[in-house]
Length: 338
Ligand code: AQP
Image 1 (tube, rainbow, N blue to C red):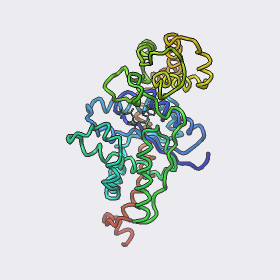
Image 2: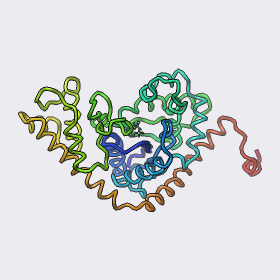
Image 3: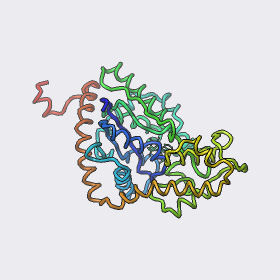
Image 4: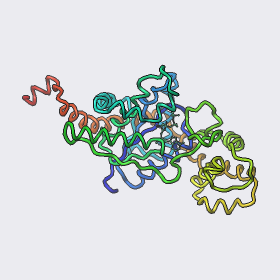
């Protein structure tokens, strides 16, 4: 343990992909094993920045939590909770909207990618990075393990925290991003220039953690490669094969160099068969643990997690309210004789 405090989250906006796992959740588990104090959230308030079916959202919220646990997060060691169960997120999110600047949000690329520049996009998608800043700052997190796509939002979080501290008084810890060197950006199987995403339209673009062995094989077989027949890591000229090599390396623990040597002169077909097997083997353990978890157990862990998270979040929020100059509630006023 190194005195770090970790915060991170995953949206229940679809089926978790191997991108979410390799870019984020695998790091969460490693940090837990190192004994770090950590808060891992199912960020449902973020998920509704794009339209969701309410029934499905409820189901996906439990599923993401169950997958956190199946991947190795232990609710007795790390605090696992649902964002909307801790109202402090929404309140600090609002306060920080009064600190963040429009110019800063205009520079964020994710809402442009997701919203496609349409006027009908909801305002939440635009202000999402400010809510993400609130999520992190509420817990005074020192480190935030995320994939490469979240780096810009982390920089914004630091800017908002710094401005708040200068303008209102020292309150927030400035968090550092923790972005893995490999796995930080797993690309889509159908369009290897784009990141793999759980909400992309084409289901064949991603492997989800609960895919069957047959489905994994089918998706890997269909993965876009190139017209050469050389298994070589070159993300610019061979993005498809390079992405498959990264996935193979991350799941098997073999280096990319070793894989290039192992598959020198081998056709794409047999390479893809082996890769599908490696992914299947790795996911089978997660799937076994997932099947063993009961819904009641997951929900009870989330309830306990929300209580623990609220205690920390409320302390920070209370200080933020004071620094803004809000009048405390009457009973607090009387007891503190303010
Ligand atoms: N392709 C990826 N490679 C590496 N890391 C990834 N992450 C997501 N996709 C990849 C990381 O997973 C964590 C949780 O992501 P999120 O659910 O908060 O939102 P996201 O980044 O927008 O992920 P998705 O899968 O693309 O979701 P949708 O489709 O709903 O937008 C983050 O740490 C992220 O970096």
